[in-house]
Image (cartoon, rainbow, N blue to C red; front, side, top):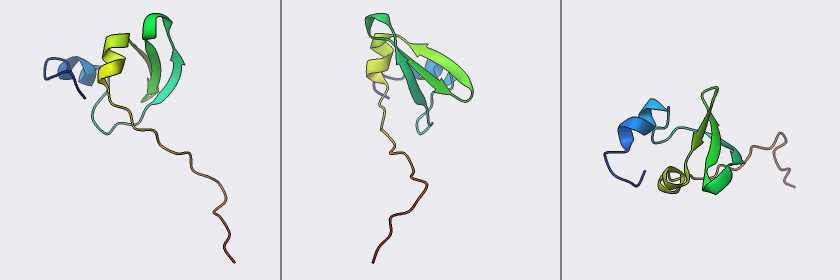
Length: 68
């Protein structure tokens, strides 16, 4: 998370911690982002959304690729 130490406690209170998995559920007005994590929906304002680093996770496929 970029944005410094001052931001970390408020993000932790929302359930956002390094390594936590979340799902982007929508884009809000003025650049905000709605995310789902731990059964809750959280909306981040644009400035906070820019500071939270997100790494996409590829979806798992039900069938493994067949070789040969």
